[in-house]
Image 1 (cartoon, helix red, strand yellow):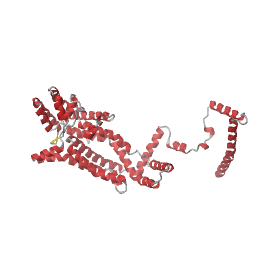
Image 2 (cartoon, one colour):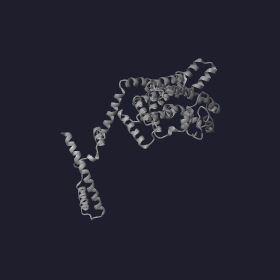
Image 3 (cartoon, one colour):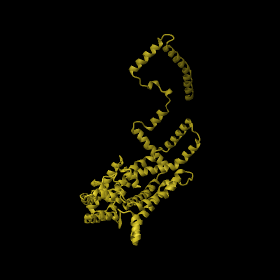
Image 4 (cartoon, rainbow, N blue to C red):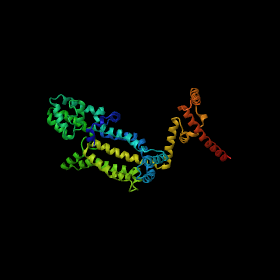
Length: 438
């Protein structure tokens, strides 16, 4: 997945680029903190702490989204009933009426059609920005970048280095086309070397034997940083699995499959824990239920595939994020269990009312203004400036003095007719009001 998105260069998109830079600073702070305080230089541990921090920051958005999901379980029967009521009616009047009734349902529960989408849309840029950081840690973490710089400087001092690096970089596992990336740039070479696996380093030694000692030293330093519980996070678990099977190393096989299996299992539990999975599966005709059912099995299978084929560092992130989501989901479910849909609707309505009052008009006043019939507005309450009064008097006088047959005289005639018709109606309404009061 990242290879496809990375090829599109989405990490340099506006907003995502800025968020990636911010997340990169967090990763850099974590690495420096562990190094200076505990003397630990381990990228795998940094990724786990980094994942916990990022997903903790997103808890408020997750709660808001799942509150909407809980409300949807109550609203959906009413919405489906309304859709059934207007099924087959495509005329404009029916569509407008359906929209009005739909808005009343959302207003009843204090939410809106975009209530569940907005938190997700806010989370997407952050989630997208995570991948460039995890995939290219040296770009953001100074301590890791400094390990690569000595060998990069020696490579760039070697004759014909660019062609050699391009031939290695355009093949697996790097897959960075020379048409897109400038192999004469030190920063690009650091990015290329970060994707190297053991076999790739061996290829570089064959092509640049003069740098054999420096390459071995760099591999040792990076191996120390990339080693997480005996797993090389720079190597894909599938590569580790095939090499361990051919060598008959059972420990290597276990190490290779542990990250993908844990990631898939945690992903499955995370999906099952989400309230939408429990509230919508009861209705076999609900398309959302069918979608959630397929996601329950599709997401774990995707996790299993990607964690096998991508470097283990991304697998650790995937695994950590799934476990963190499981723990968070248990806490969120416990929190949301305290609130019924009616309580959530009341909270939503109170927030809307406060927002309106903050903008200068409370909910009661808005309702009064919306239901006021303009025909019953008391003229004494209408503020008319002195200048406007003079203009009105001039216009009235002009109409009175108009010549017979002129446009003004005709307008006066229409006005007198309207007044003669409306006066009896007004009198009857007044008499009716007085009798009701008595």
